[in-house]
Image 1 (cartoon, one colour):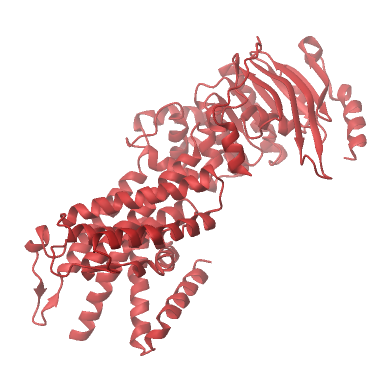
Image 2 (spheres, rainbow, N blue to C red):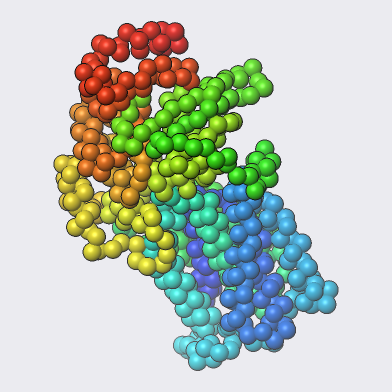
Length: 574
């Protein structure tokens, strides 16, 4: 019995310590969907840094904070490589891990007079000084050592509660939304890259913190401590999320903590089988494999854009595309010059229906307006300012957009209420105040009531569980909640059934009229193009071949444009 209890204590000891690492991996892997290999370097960074500082007489509790900060700094560098230099997550992790091998070695040798191991067995640590001295070392007749378990448990609970509180703030909600759908973050007028960098910093901070705790428990630190941490952390996350995903009341952080304990228990069982230690890493890999089965040219652009300012262009229109040129696959056999000095003026209050054959430039034009595609030359003048060099997320602060795919305009893993709360905060800072302002719920209900779909009674439901029509109606409400100057509708009824399309168009017309929104709507539905809006533009080959407004638009019928549309469609082979 004593042996069993000691084994359980060992599992709790290591499982809780490595749970700190698992929480970091939960942020990067589960929330951000970023397989971050750099933790193999930031884990020993926290260990080595703590070991060196403790040898120098620094308070061991302060070492935890310093290690966390150092891990965050390393995570920022990983994020910058991914966001600014567009390097893939896998390569970012490899590069950072390789760099940390040298950084950790330099720190280790500088703090130990050239030694390869930082030993501090006789020094004060978080397990034998301060608050630890108030906790008894042993309990029971068997003298079971429990101080380490208690200290580790306190640390894990504190970190879990702080992380849970953060994920409930506006900033935390935005981080979750970025991982699920970064386009949604752009539509909220925020830079998803910044959120990814912060998430990677937070994840690596937890990894370094885990390294510091484990090093202080061992009384030593070395370069080899980081080997296999990615496997261990990911296995804990995947096991936890797989085994406990059906427990509705359990938070993700709790799941990964339990996953760490399960992983350590499984590893302990494998060791008890008497398998030679040479196979330890193989056993870890097999446990990870089981966990997986259970879980079922940019640098040049960055440099050349620095300091570049758009040329001022005068325009009295609300929006003006001036002399836009765009060539795709330039210099290849697939070169396609879509726009050649294309110009379009959109007046304040216009509701323009844009039609045309596939490949005519409709959606590309919208992407140029919104910043998703950069023209080779020309100007995009919006509210009198040339915004051609502005970032997509910056333009989104004044431009609302509903895309063809209902999933793209909302975050499926957030509730209707949480989606609306994020959108309501679009023009305000995303800080650490509560994400949902309960005083605004009645306002949200009134907005949803206007849809006539009963969504006001389902605000606690995940957006991902809604039908396509309901989710697109929610996306329209979200896109128009803030005080915007332009609404972009990119085939927003195309993915819906006929009845849902009719309903959504009526909602669209109502919202546009009530808010007096200047609107650009791309559609393949000629009847919608004729019945809705104050102006109709037909595009072909990157040009506006038809532009009808005023009384002519009011009196327009489908047959008036059908002949021209069929003509260009046949010409394009559609």
